[in-house]
Image 1 (cartoon, one colour):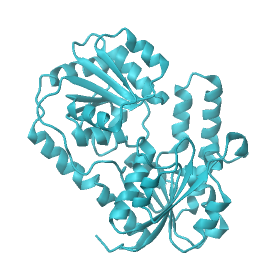
Image 2: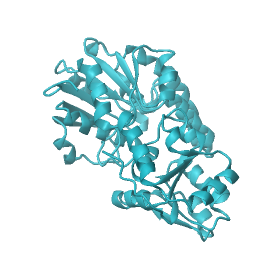
Image 3: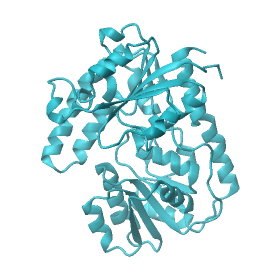
Amino acid sequence: MGNYSGKHLHIVSFNVPYPPDYGGVIDVYYKIKALHDLGIKVHLHCFHYGRDESPELNAICEKVYYYPRKKFYQAIYSNVPYIVGSRQSDELLSNLTADDAPILFEGLHTCFYLKHPALKDKLKCVRMHNVEWDYYRSLKESERNYLYKFYFYNESKKLKKFEDELKHADKIFAISKSDYEYLRVSYENIHYISAFHNNETVTSLSGKGNFILYHGNLSVVENNQAAMFIAKRIADGLPYKFIIAGKDPLPSLKKEIKNLKNIELIPNPPFEQMAELMRDAHINLLLTFQQTGIKLKLLNSLYRGRFVVVNGKMVNNTGLETLCIVEDNPNATKRILSGLMDTEFTQHDINKRRLQLDAGFGNLHNATLIAKEMFGA
């Protein structure tokens, strides 16, 4: 495993990664925790907006720095995307140059200083959470508000151009196999390191549950679209209880569900309740209409839940295809759900899942891969 105890590492995060309650910060927090478990001393640099400074981070970091994210009017640059330009700070640059420890930039968002001359002698690695320009292009397609549509379009164009800055990184860590395949065409030293998550081992229960669950951040357009699709095209007409749970559901979803007797909406469930819902459901039903890398809710459902039914875009090129039931046609999905509701989830299913997940998706395993690349074997 290598001895990394006492090694120092700077991590620049796009947001405060505690509490770890949504996709990107979950990856950051559990990565830091796993690196800490290897004995690495993490100097964490956070841009914060809408989230408070977090004393909990002191337990797994050598030091934590906080920088305010710039407002929109302070970060308008002709060629720099807003998500990048709003995360710059002279103080950050000064702190990064104070020693010779390597730097891990979390997401293209934090790469404003990637090519800065003051950092030219430092080992610089970038953890890519998405192909950002493609993600923003997808957001533009899903958005109905013309002002937001224009913003996403403009940001996507700038992100595609800014992505070229990755040539200044010594190494790039892709979060999914599809992102890895995309990045390796243009850049060298690409490594596939799967998403970090809040699971140490598979805790799925055998037996049967009595409901079907969809969960996600329901304020995100993509997740709202998936929840609406489930309500209109899948749950409708089935004699089973559906639960849709997640953060800040949009008014359109509330209105849609209001008249459907077999769907319960649970807004803003606390972490413990969400974990219980995933565990107790008979089926975790996960759909997406944007293929944007591995979804943490997919990993969580596999580690904690029983049957996992997905559409192709949720699981393609993740290495998790064989652990899920994959179907794109809504009528066929209805038939699959009906069949599974009468089927027990067995210990054999759990053992198969545990074997595959421990091999390539464990946090300590993935942290060791990062440590090897940043400090040597």
